Length: 529
Image 1 (tube, helix red, strand yellow):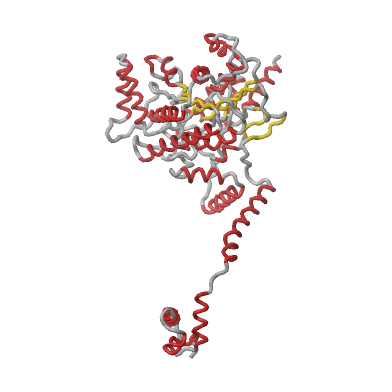
Image 2: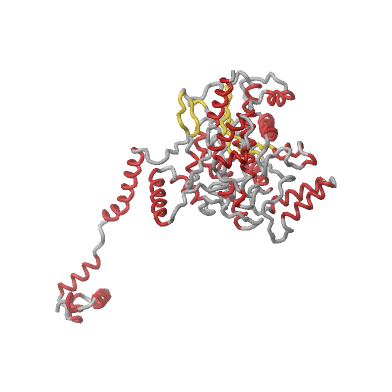
């Protein structure tokens, strides 16, 4: 009998099952199948796939991806995310495209202050890196109004024979994920000190738990994605997917309105003590823990700054019912009643609570500062008591518009105070240059630094227009029809420039670089003799 033509697969299964208990002869007799066919069935069932087949299966895709990566690099496809760029004359500067590693969709590309430093560190150099978000960068007065410029100027005045390098890597709309990713290359550049001022963007900053650019709450996944973004293959695959997607979805080819702040806030409402709220705190603590561990391993000194925000003059953006609490707006109103009655201690607690109840988490909750304090003690890290210093310079000890231009960015006076807070911490912890003694009395250093602080009228105009732009959009303006559309005529109507510097400031906000804006102003003044 020919089993291939007259028996089903079920009979073959029965033969294989019987093989465990019966001999080949017994099976042949039972099913009336020739012995050679029985042996063929048994042999076919015991054949194994050769190991080289699995090796090829595994390594072939890897080899393909490696070759694709080599090809894409050779043709200069996409962006190179090497952290430092050779700026010539033996100098490094941060890669201007580095932010695209964290902002993988859209055309947003925040830049840093572009501070240059020597590729080969000088023997008498004192090198400080600043890490943080837009407040570290110095928005809206960056680069000249930032607290890093105060520190640099003060160091230059106090230690004239030391080669001072203060490199500000602060960046708009990023958070602790970016800081952690940038840190390793920072540590490779022989820093004498790292200053960190961050915590406001843990929810809506790039890759944050409530952000438009979020990949969930798994730090392992997010850090893996950041790592994979270094490869051209990842960029190619992402761009290919976006291209295919665009074929099925019509694009209006219209630049999105609103500021980056408004576009980043994907999950706008984040209730106090909710899962997303707690995830943001855990994200900050875990990333900051890894940052401090790496700094400890390299024996690099670090100062953490406690974050500040506008409590008194910034009412909650989104007031919602929160389990166990009165809504944020009522708390804020009660805080003001106590402030007017000079019950400053009660008012301060209520203003702080109103901020924490604000469901739009642009301002860091108070627990961020508690995490900073906790990790400072755990790692024996210096803490710059920024909040205490700002409070001491505010009426009733409560921060408001006296030092802030919006909900959390300081004004120029505030940035100088922020720089002073970090500098005093450097002084207290003996983190200043050790190869030279200060020739200027401590009590005169701050006033002398402010007197020599380089901040032009153009810097001021650019900053003021940035503020107008910010406050002409959500969440300051709730009606979408009133929001600023990004075209030249709207800018002119909104800003109403009154002189040459105002006009240049408008061009700067529209995309002209800071350097080109100042060169344009210089050329104009030169023509006027």
